[in-house]
Image 1: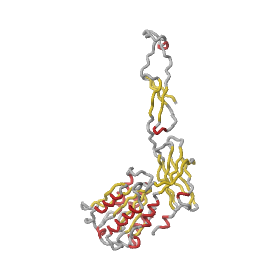
Image 2: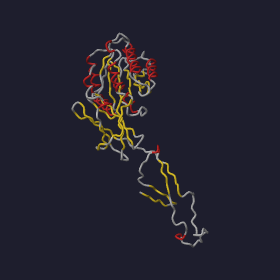
Image 3: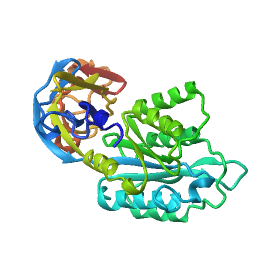
Image 4: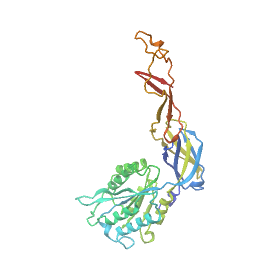
Length: 364
């Protein structure tokens, strides 16, 4: 495999933060090339630079998010390096991915190609994120490549595919791969390629490139550089590598992540980091803590038990109009308030406001 050494370089990524059970916080962590494997590597969590005590540590099948990108130029219908039409070569490889390496219970899949109904090849999301992998295969079969264009805007296609990762539906904690099948031809400016790499990095997307049809070294370098700059892998689809088992195995392995849980004492932490040691050096990954939007508690007035309190003379008789208010009974009103947090959580109150008529009393 190409870039095999790079794929084994130790890496650590904090892929997501789950605050659904706040103040209990769960962090999902992905690692590659670790000396003892992800499951056995010692991980340490830091909140705003201070180490926190992990209360639960487990390996869990979080899943992956894979975008398949088909650079379908007119040569896609010609025979490729396996002797089959390139379109069929790609379908066989994608079918293997969905049937042998992905799980519809946890893994999201999408397909991007060109809309060829107009005069130009226009990048289009053919199938948006779904766990129905059979639907993606069906849409691949139905995709019309009979009118594919002689030249296609590969990097425009990749920009469209990368922006699809902004969809919040699949969540943020899955490892993200964009797998593009292409001959590698594109006349994009260097500055635009650098922008593409930045956008992939911002979204945590690895771009894996698969060269089909051509065995041109110049086009191969174009695809290799794209993968190299996004921590992805390069493959050449040929008779010896028709179903891409190495690439699919790496993606399938990324489905497993470590989930570390701790209890925060802050109403809004700023940053979370995870650290480990591998290959003789310290690895660290940091992410900004998501802005918290706590669910409102239920507030119940337990006392007084009536909606209206009438003040009167000590014997209960109506007070004359000229009687000073200080002489009316009751002179004190007991107020008891019950606060119930969603999910039976126990959170501390910072302050309470009591509104009595047109007067507000704040209790800290």
